[in-house]
Amino acid sequence: CSLGLPPSFRRRFWSFDLVSCFLQGQFFHTLVIKSLGYNRLVLQIGRGKVVPEPFSTESFTLDVYRYKDSLKEDLQKADLVISHAGAGSCLETLEKRKPLVVVINEKLMNNHQLELAKQLHKDGHLFYCTCSTLPGLLQSMDLSTLKCFPPGQPEKFSAFLDKVVGLQK
Picture 1 (cartoon, one colour):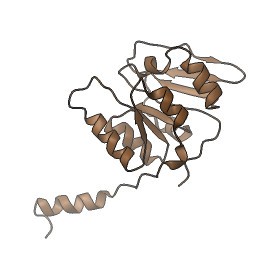
Picture 2 (cartoon, helix red, strand yellow):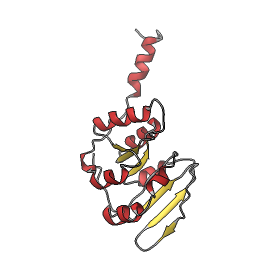
Picture 3 (cartoon, one colour):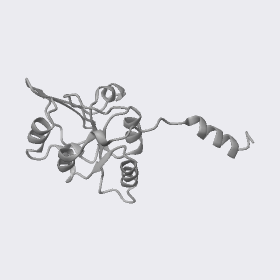
Picture 4 (cartoon, helix red, strand yellow):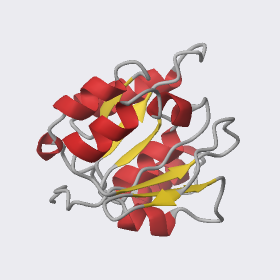
């Protein structure tokens, strides 16, 4: 599987004001446009308080929306996804074989997001960071080191469940 990056840029964001974290200071302009060479950024801002103004220039486009019925199209077009570390978001993105950076919500108690991110990182499937370490990670990460996430095997779980409830011996 190849996780190469053509020069276009789409990203997905969720709550805990990840958008605010991403757009702080000059980080947006210098890091994203110049250093990484992307020309498009798509933000899903959800209930976020920060609502960036969409714009388009010759060299860069910013699209912003709160919610969509489905993120399927955005994921298909994405070259890189930055998301919170919820299990559903991680698995949906990795199953689409998209490079993933997850930003941990440090305010969560019993941080299951951190546990999941650490394990998926250890297995080589994603990078993770906090809001404060996001700029450095984006500058230093090597997406070519990521491994494809193995496809699910629901039939194994079904067989296991059948055996547990006595439908199969």
